[in-house]
Image 1: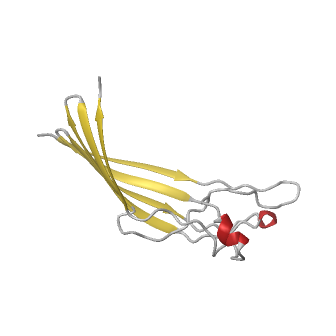
Image 2: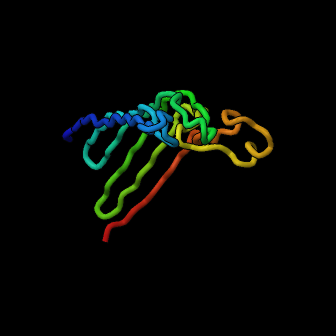
Amino acid sequence: MVWEWNISGQLSYTRGKDRTTGVNLYNIMPLNAKIALGHQAGNWTNAIELEAASGKTRLAEDRMEAATSGYGLVNLRSSYQAGAVQVDFAVENLFDRDYARPLGGVDRAKFRDGANGSDALVHGPGRSVSLGVSYKF
């Protein structure tokens, strides 16, 4: 059986600023990255993925944009291919970390009821497990 390993990654950074007023633009993702270590052996494909984002501190205050803290997540993925059938399994946010996505927005009901921006942030999903089966024809 042949074992193959690979590493993949993505790094993104955007800086948005109105050149006339100097005001930060709304809904701009801060520095974020994903790196994955993949492994393939026979019909099995597996990966462990690290996903991270820095805190959102450059805010569009005129739109009451809320700051978020940085976070890091670990995701696991596995799939098995048997002929035309493929079974996929994944666990995302493996350690069930509580975090707010920088572009996740706010819960309008909490905000309307008087919560400030950071108290009304929509948090990212907790540990999620998924299983999928596909058939190619």
